[in-house]
Length: 299
Image: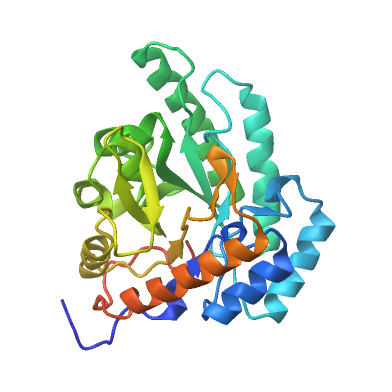
C-alpha cells in the first residue's frame, strides 16, 4: 500500500446529520465547522426525509448547494428496526419510491436499507420473505436508476457475513450493494474485521462508530479509535483494497434513534463536533489507497 499521501482527508469524510442536530441549518453549520464537505441525511426536525414535502426538499437542496455540501447517501427506514418481516410490504415500497424522489432532488442516488427483523417466523420462512422483499426493492431501485446500500444492522442479512454474502450474491444486481458499519458488530456479537474481509468487494459506503461490548452483550458507544470496533484496522483494510468512498460518522453517543435516546441540542452538538474532529485526526493517519478498484464515489 502506498504511504505517500498523508492520510484519508476530509473530502471523503461526512456524517449523519441528525446525530448532530435536529434542524437542517444546524446540521449544515456543524458539518461546515468540522470541515466535512457532505452530510448524510436521515431526518430533519425529527421527520424522515421520505415524509417531507417535495418542495421543502427542493429548498433543502438549494440551501445545501449554497453551503457547498453534497448528500452522498439518504438513510431510509426500509427494512429497519422500525418494521418487521411480517409488516405491510406495500407501505415499504411506497416509502422507497418517495425516498427515491427526494434523494434525486438532492442529487443523491444511494439509499440505505436493511433486511427486516423477524417477527416470530421460522428461520426458513424469515429468509424466504426477506429475499422476496429485497428482490422487489432491488427491482424498483434498478428501474429508478438508484442503488440500495444494505447495512449490517437489524434484519436477516445483518446476522453475519454469511447471510450478507448470500443476499448480495443471490440477488446479484448492481443496484444492491453494501453499507458497512464498523461498530454494529458490537451490538450483534461479531468482530468487524472478519466481516469486512468477507464482504469487502461489495462495500460502497462506511459508517463509523466505536465502543465496547458489555458482558450482557449490549454495546456502549464512545469516541472513534478508543473502543473495540477496530476502526483503524478496518480503514486500513478498506484503503489497501482501493476503497475510494465516504466514511460517515454515526457516533451514537448523544443520539441512538432505535433506543429512543437523545441528549438534546447543545449536548448533541458538542458530542458530535468532538467526535468529528477526533475521527478527522484518526483518518489523517491512515494511508490512502492508490487508485484502483475503488468503490462508487457517489455512494
